[in-house]
Amino acid sequence: MKKLSIVAAALLSAFVATQVSAATDTTGFYVGGALNKVTVDVFDESESGTGFGVYGGYNFNEWFGLEANLFATGDLGDRDVDIGAGALSFTPKFTAQINDIFSAYAKVGIASMALVIDDGSDDEDFTGFGWTYGVGVNAAVTEHLNIRVSYDVTTGDLEADRHNSIDIDTDIKQFAVGLHYQF
Image (cartoon, rainbow, N blue to C red; front, side):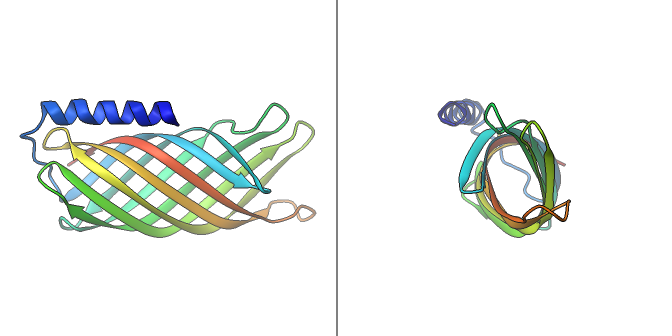
């Protein structure tokens, strides 16, 4: 996570230093991708790894928009257990313009979640709905290109696909660095 934070800060500084005069377009559609540091809290344990995501939305004005975010992870488990996670979330997003380059946002909404746990002899799928919330900062690289640093938490009660398994409460936390195009 420390390496991802350093890379994010370096990229953000480099782009902002070269594009000081760029003013972001704050309304309309946007679409982008992100690299995520994901932590899954399940069964009183935490597993972490890398995930990838895509996001997009529509800003109705400079302070309000709607956003969808889809992400998935690779293997988050240890040597004996493989864990994969993913979620699709829909949120209203509230943005505060700091200046022509920077903006901060907060969002809260619903999410469809999935978790796959494979212990080598058997695998179990858990699915369900939950809540998601997050905060982040956008920085304009050009008029239409933005870098984003964000932190999102998705939490919910997931039901096992098989009836003989237990249901679980889980939290999925993401620290993400993303790049999106504002149309």
